Image (tube, rainbow, N blue to C red; front, side, top):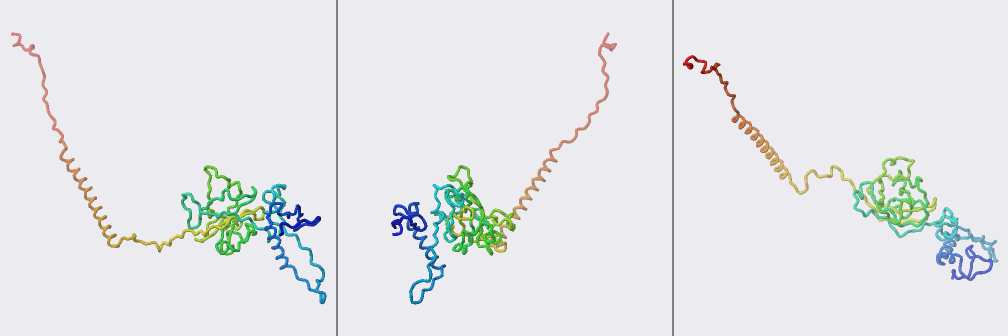
Length: 334
């Protein structure tokens, strides 16, 4: 078995020192099957890329010797070790990976973005939708940038994590014609604390920016989505330009569709034209009756008010009369 090959002094296996009868990869926590997978993958690539040498006529030998096999490099997740000094480019602190591009793959997490579960208005509109934040999902360095990838379904199988955000292939302004996917809403673990603190906003609204829709200088704009979709999204963590972790793709998300004015019915549902005419006539008659009652009340109050008025009393004339005392008369003295 590959993982139990006995060591030979001065000989290394896969370019790594063998100790105690176990490959270096197994001692450092890498399963033997992973080492074997990477090794045989390299052999396949080498067999395809290297030209074959011609055999010597009659001798059955090879002209010259094959060049030495280059040492395959393990993936960044296997080469990184927290016991080594932190170096940018490796999760948890380790030497940066020098693996060829076809060995650099991001760790796929068992998480899929979902729509917000809170009773939130406008969960899906004609140009936006609301996602749950990826809380307690990523285990990356604090300076790793977590991006939201929005793509049309046909771009999901061939999506390339190595294409950096902000490039024309990932620009919002070209979505979905020249850019089948774009990257936006970049953030770090600082904005996705775990566990959730009381009062935190734990949702992301996709498509909420309208000021940068046509701004070529903002290729990572979180602009309104151009149509009802469907769309699929995922979160991708980058350390510099190297993808280190990604979530699974979400289920297709279809937005609401606005109705054209011509498709809106002018009559109420379940009501005939005759019912509408009868209702209108009754409303007019009721208005006339109400106006007549008000007029009668006004005229009646004026009539009652005129019969209860008082006439002005006539003036009373009094003749002047001079008073005199009875004792002043001469007859009284007799």
